[in-house]
Length: 362
Image 1 (tube, helix red, strand yellow):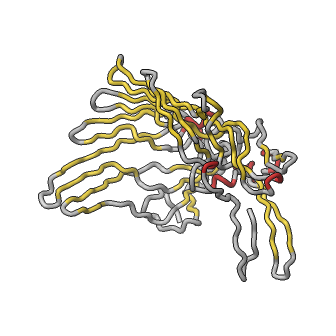
Image 2: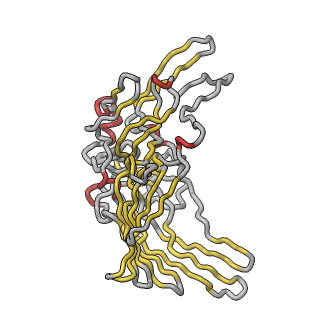
Image 3: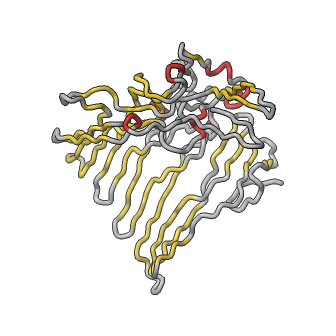
């Protein structure tokens, strides 16, 4: 079959590829996915309108494919069903990152119009810069862009061993290499982050970020019989956290909020970083297979992307305490529930033995 575009109405199975006539470009087609159009509540209706969204890409310089995507939300209209009168309307305007030089089509919400209020505008860090393909290997240990665009995805899939140089300490704990291609990049993680919001009243809010840091991590090794425990260690993690928020009523009138991610000691002084690394990257999976005769065999798999990037639950880092400082030198200190304050939650998943499946362990 031949397709020049892949719309929401493409019924080709997800595991099928469609070759275009030029023979050097592929389109991966997803089944039809419906998007909500109307919500009715008593005598009110909330209506949603959409526009075409440019496809994002995955692949490599020698094999490029389009991913079919949902349409972009264009309007939200609230109506009185009896009279047909519009009670509230909202219109969204988008633009894209440049797709030249092998970059991806990443949509950004630029402007939001709300009836009776006016226009809201949004700005983003590095919006006009290169954004990688969906399957790019230019990512850090936690899946964030790290600007290593020199690493070719297909090359990594063929030669995973030579890239990561996995090592273990004396307690059989996986150690990350500082010169690894998966090292986080603050500038890379900042790509696409919200930079500013402008308001119909003339005011504006600006956002500033910094890298994630931690002083403890959840790990497991020989000392704990490979059960999870908190280990004192420092490091940087992928992604960013809020450093400063500045609210402007006008050019000369602003309110500043600065954020510190530190433990507060009993004497009121600041202690260590309050970050706790919950998901430490793992590139090797070892497991034991027991066949129906009771014979055990050990097997191992090396991955070229950390296994934690395949989970959607929770975050990879949390903060026990955060201090919010204001322009008038006042502050608020926030304490949050965190790993060391709650019951042990195992990360090791054990699949129970069944008649048809042998037990295996991550």
